[in-house]
Image (cartoon, rainbow, N blue to C red; front, side, top):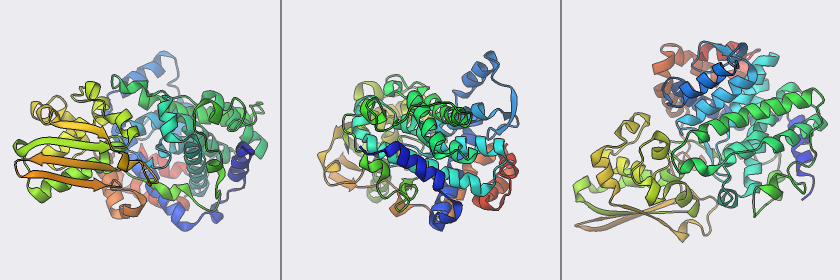
Length: 455
């Protein structure tokens, strides 16, 4: 290990808008728009939102501020706006995913960037630069943690590495020095938390802890801005992130090709509102249903092969075969697979079929197994093998990648349509104007002129 914390801090400090390749800036805008669509819809429909709002009210944390919570006409204080936007944007499980690190970069980073961007009167260019800085930091730390080992220890990387990404974005907008950024990362190390225990009962922790990562990053950067002395060597130290959160650290991945290779360009987007480990199988099931004109009554058995991470998150038959909550459904290969095979499609509104007898009966025909072919010689673990047994024989497909990865990234029109489908029920006619503002964010001298369209 060789000064990874300081190297990342120097990168964030020195990053300038004009130095970021145009394709990276364009991708950051699309990813931001994609995330905000989920946040806006969740403000109205996520079942966990009322509990969070009541908590804030009970603790007198619901005071008016200057930061936007998207889809909400009220403005909030920066830290609370980051908390709510992070939790909301992650609630539908429709937000982006960085395959190599198995984390959702926008969920902690974008809320922190907008909260502090509005607070300091930053421009759209400033905010885009901060978002890229945050993406690069959290994705690289996720790589260094090694997602398989990190998951095995019971951690949720979006909430752990995500705290550092949020601190990087907030710190960039504050104009922190290199030493202050090191301090902010030091505080982030004390706040990097997120448990996978939510998988047992479909709990709402997953949403909250990602929102908390955004908020904690904002707090860490604000402490550093005010000369708080944070721990040094927060990433590589004896008791640092890589020592405490993984059994297979790769510190070199935190800084490899930093400033030359952009992890931002490796972030994929979701066509379905569920755990990314279900997506390749869903793609295959929909394609096979169409190709073979399958109906549920023709299906005798379905076997889904996944990487062991996918088994951990979505394949435990004892707890996931018949989910009763949305979170449970989002992390059930059985439910999402049965839904896709039954309908030939899958969208947010389809969670209304939780508990549907026809879906449960079809899910009973599914087995989810670990497939070593999805671990050997592959750069990331999101592939799937699908075998469907019918009276006509066995039909099998192996999808190395789910749709929406960089090699099949949707065009701008498709991304805007996904956003509008989510945002129109909340923003109505303003949805198009807000989408246009985000896609031209660099033109705004004050980012608040764009964010006000998203309330």
